[in-house]
Length: 433
Ligand code: GUN
Ligand code: ZN
Image (tube, rainbow, N blue to C red; front, side, top):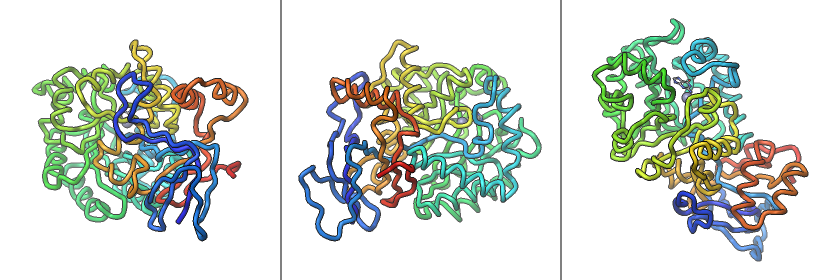
């Protein structure tokens, strides 16, 4: 058994919008998190607890311990074009993203990219992810394999795109279905891996391909589905032209049978009331990607309306549209996006959106997202402050929310001390005790 000593913070419910004193916050300073040899959380013990002989003690006193972050929307190959200068979505895809993704049909490129991506996630405090590889079967295959090697929870699938893309990035319906079925057979349900039917977005799939994707979902309700929706206004207009019979962008996916409890839809900035009602009814989640939305000038996501309508929202980096793999930076940006809308996002609701909320929305709350006994011990230890300004500001905090909010806004991946995956150290900063 391992015993990790640190300041434990997690959630056992959903913090209310704007509630800085939420009862859903579980704050257990200087406690012990016990981890069994099976990699699962055993119990939490108070400060006075004495580790029995034979316990492997990890003394991270003075560090903040959180459940590992869950990034519900990110593109593995786009680390190659992260922070590309100067354009909105459609132009950015053509100019930077499609050329970069074209290289991933090469198994060596796919392998190196998968390793680089997952190691980077772990070095940013993200232990679980719902990710896009590329259209190439090998890129999905190598990503699954690399996650399995690291013992990580990963949901991914070969990207489907058979039109409006360069030759090197187009598949066709028959071959794509065959590739999906082979990958599902090989990886879905193996260790901590699940397959997601991955439609890039409506403009890059023919109606025939969307129908094929829908039939894959119907054939196996344990599969996830991931795509983009209503991110950018030019994109929304284009979808209207391509699918004139659909009521809305979201309706394109509904008609194809792609919306269900395990659907993860990135962005959802330009949705209306009827779309939100449909999302609630279906139980699908929005992966809100605030750093991407400001970087690509896409718009300001109405989280409050989603909350009021009861739609599940998780937070995601959307690298490389998003400029950072850091969930801290991403949550800080979410706060600013809400500020621009005249709303206030609490530190609790932000952190919940990167831990328990995605775990529940993915139906994985028995495995990840909190310190409940029985969960897999995917946990990260963070330095409260890096540098004098942060140390001073945190020392001035008058209450817990103020302290955690200051940590969230001033911190980034340089605050990460250690990441554990299933109880094993998966990343360690050089300065960690
Ligand atoms: N819409 C379709 N493809 C993409 C992508 O790669 N990134 C983002 N942000 N939006 C998309
Ligand atoms: Zn994306």
